Image 1 (tube, one colour):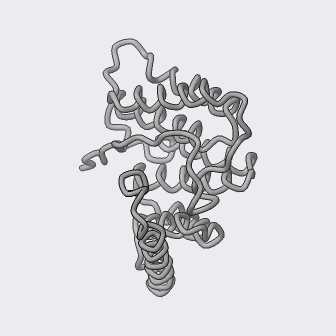
Image 2 (cartoon, one colour):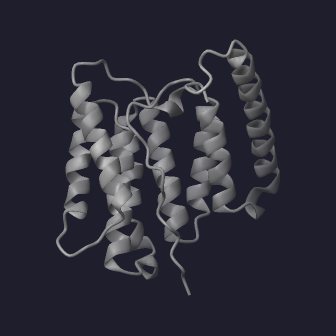
Image 3 (cartoon, helix red, strand yellow):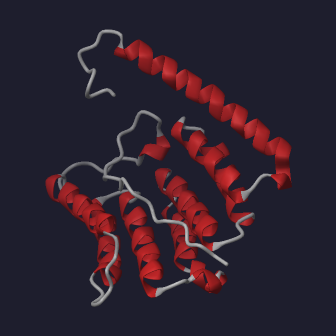
Length: 211
């Protein structure tokens, strides 16, 4: 919206109003999730965590993401929660702690082996985790290391992985090529007004049908 209406004199007022509304909504969602307790699902906690992260409430977002991970019932919920915690920790330069949770995301099919429905799905999930890790990285050296790990899945012969994964990887590499000398910036999770240093995919992995 900012790019399209950048010359609109009312844009700052509109953005401020939208952000204020987002704060109220996220806080209400947090209160509801706390009230529901064990009756809330992993997805519920995950959505609340994302909303809180978007308004800069990192501590509350982390609390909800941990609950999302603890209440996960399948691979999709588990990997999403683990990635979210990793992202929040990296936003505060807690690299070692972030590594723990991204590694948990990579171990998802050890925990939910029945959800590994086929080789393409497993490779796509792991490639996406490495690319999320790259995109959340605190600098390009770290990011490109995870791109290399993602390539182990993306370049596996015979697998036809979703095209958006390759585009996502190429966007990260391109960004680093252009900004190798720039100072590292925090990911968007650290501040609601911060621009994420790496592009995000437009698509997401489909949830497998689990019988």
